[in-house]
Image (tube, rainbow, N blue to C red; front, top):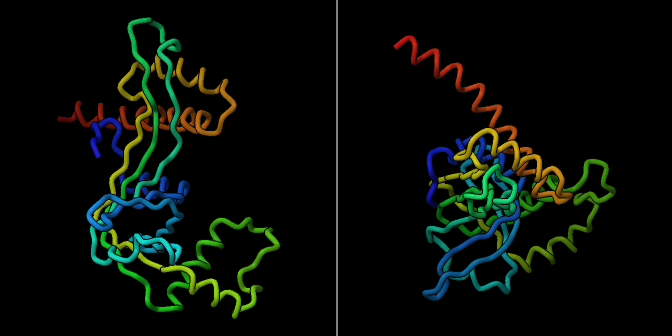
Length: 217
């Protein structure tokens, strides 16, 4: 992925994007052509791999073992109109957050590992006060459902993240964009505005330290 320096996420920020936007697109090669599946992926505790499962009828898993694959996690994104700027000498753009994870796939043959990964997925997305508890489901019923999926894990070799949040524009222009986004009642627009504000604060906190180091040198 092309990542200009101002847009690059650090490792911790990339992990946050994955945790908050777990529904990913998994790309691999199948029968000589690119193939993609949209599915939830869950990172393990030590952040060394991603767990997921295919529907058994999905052909992607049949030749994926050992492949170098790409999982794309899409964060919030939205259109940025040049009409929001202080000048008419501008063009439209798009602000967005995304993380790419690369690794090799290993199919899960251990039934307990598959069951644990699916339990962890349910625990992540079910509300704490939900009446649904996986432990209450008939084990025989669950075992039958598990036969209809193919579990896998991606052993991570590389993670890269990008947050394009108008960092290449002036603070005035970033503020104008945020003000406009705050008037749009859509989740992605609100989240992009929030991330832009957090990025400005982060850069302000970095600036004094960088200036101190510059004076010392």
